[in-house]
Length: 236
Image (cartoon, rainbow, N blue to C red; front, side, top):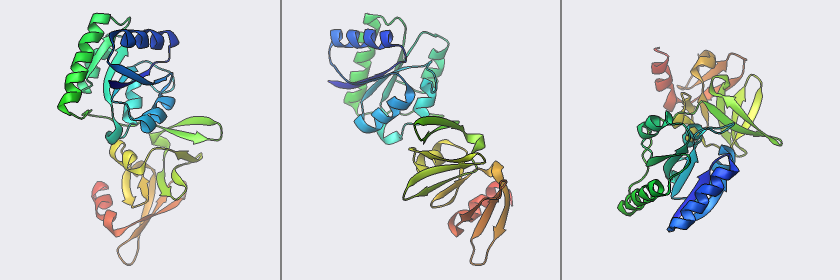
């Protein structure tokens, strides 16, 4: 049985696809989500093998959701869309397959055969060009999407990972490593990433370290290990 998850903001579309999968057989529906935020939490918790993913969704679209999934838990992706223009991009992202709405049963059978063959081979999903432009953050009882350009720096501590912006500090469930790999933020310390565009000045210190001062006058450390790369990036 293929451990399968469905993500679509339309209840009818989710129900229809689930019914088809159950009729064909061979899949265990481990989760069904109506939005990208809930889907990300479920993927991190359940680790499905296959993800049938709608492209056009509010808040986070399908491509944005993919950019937030850690490589180690990335399922095999099948895009489900009513928009044929997205099909080419889906293949460019090396997803397993795509289905056009309304989903055709015979076409779905073909996708499942391809899925089983891929899973038997042990191949891991290899998606390319995944970049994060908006970072989902938790604040009280709401989720805020913070534009990457607004981030001054990111710090990791015992309390978690926090984005620091001119407008305040926001907690995110994304890891520092994922943000380093999928954004333009640069590592300057074991616990910090910095937005180069938000740097006002760098103060060099004795011992080989340094301190960054951001445009809003916040400070963060630069360790000797990362100072060389920081200088190279700034062409110093």
